Length: 295
Ligand SMILES: [Zn+2]
Image (cartoon, rainbow, N blue to C red; front, side, top):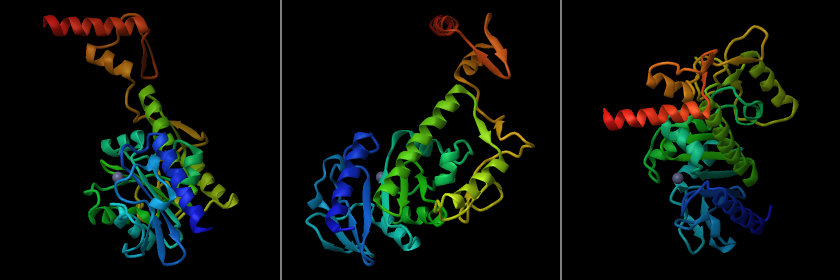
């Protein structure tokens, strides 16, 4: 692909990331291999939503600037480390998509077997240890997972994805944010059904059938090291492919009821879930406010 096309693709992806709220202000960075020994990279301190093709920097594989009026991205070290560890990777995208970054802040990895398409593409999405942005701590934190994963969360920071070209790296960022959003909704609803271990193995085989390239196999054995394979949490099951997760956090309504001292009159309870009507919930909140004021 020509250099001018790659410049145009970086501009377009930056615009999409900014439009979707994956970055605010000057956050985020994007890079792509330019031949065998150079990188084309977004510059430091520009909003990714308003870039022009001439703004990009060209560096060597040690991060030395070869061309461009602006300096390379402040996270260049992280990008360089990815290219060093993964000769197959052609492009790297980093952003702070809010739902995925919320999981990264909460310290909750996206590693549950929940969506078949996420399992076949990314496998699992671990969290790289917290590191000070722009320092060489960040590439060190990323190094642990990058050999086996095409996407990861960065603790209290954001997310990182890689791919065989710019768009494949960017689409993985979309997948991570979309998956994080779905996981959040399911957890707010108070119930998550997980894909069984056998079904996860079947999905792993599908990767071969559909020619989905992945740096490591999916594995449902929690004892396995996440540096060697994509460890997902999938329950054992005899026969059924979806298994209700017994570790799901209780729903909001159940938590409200519990903090209020049990099931309110009129609320129905089945299978550990408490359902409240809107009126019951409003009543609970009003009562709680009244108690706080007068207590
Ligand atoms: Zn960042």
